[in-house]
Length: 196
Image 1 (tube, rainbow, N blue to C red):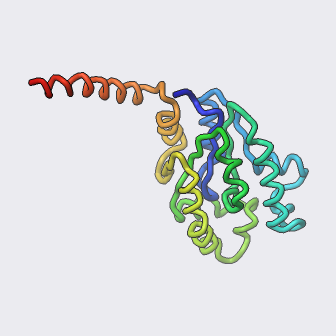
Image 2 (image 1 turned 90 degrees about the horizontal axis):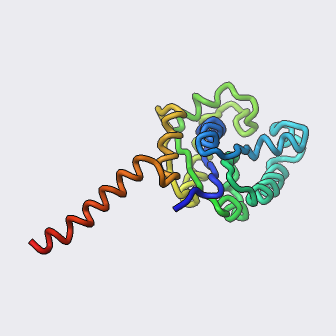
Image 3 (image 1 turned 180 degrees about the vertical axis):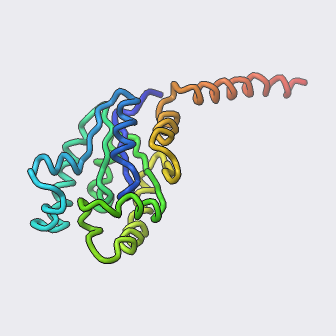
């Protein structure tokens, strides 16, 4: 098994997709892409402004077009926006030639990591925790369904998460080799036990 052409990170706001994505790309020797940042660069405006002018529906159309464009990339780690899973037409674009990783984190961690961030339009109201809870209830089943790997990030440093992900993604890691050796020993020992 070789490395996947793409690693796509999905998950809620505050899960660490950008931070972990950058570090994972460096570890794999891949290029890091962030769909939200690229949309902002192309529009020359930040996401709250796009939401204000075009509404969430307008932003989601831009997001689908961006995911379609990026689905053809290779040797990339892609961090997606938290709502990228909401449109069914995005699902094959996220899965195309990719290992999809769901970075799962608790509501408490999301609140802690997003409370000072003004660049998240869905949280600019009086009850951001309530919004995060309702979004999680809707999106968690979609993240889980799409994911090839579910990785919990609570109380873990980004470095540890990346190390664990590399072990899961890259078959040439020491952990994988140890597992292969163990399987080989069991395979050799099995017939001997049967004969004895």
